[in-house]
Length: 70
Ligand SMILES: [Zn+2]
Image 1 (cartoon, rainbow, N blue to C red):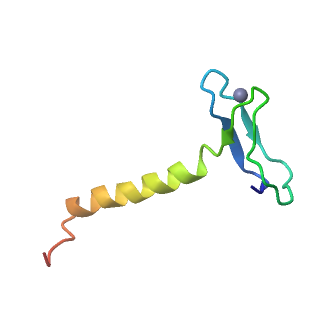
Image 2: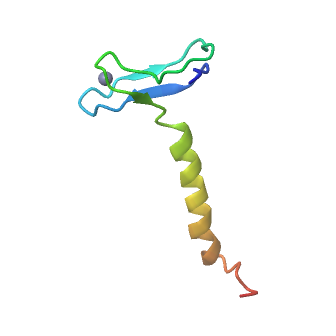
């Protein structure tokens, strides 16, 4: 995986839940980010935000009566 500046990663160990922010990008790498506790770290923000926006649109569309042709 490649670390990009500004990305945040959170430890998947709930008891640890450490979070890091990348201040300088990396070159190519084969391994995922790991916390000092040994658990894998994943991006907590970017992907969930995108899926939430999509879900909101699907929920709101019927409320505005956009499906007139059905
Ligand atoms: Zn950890």
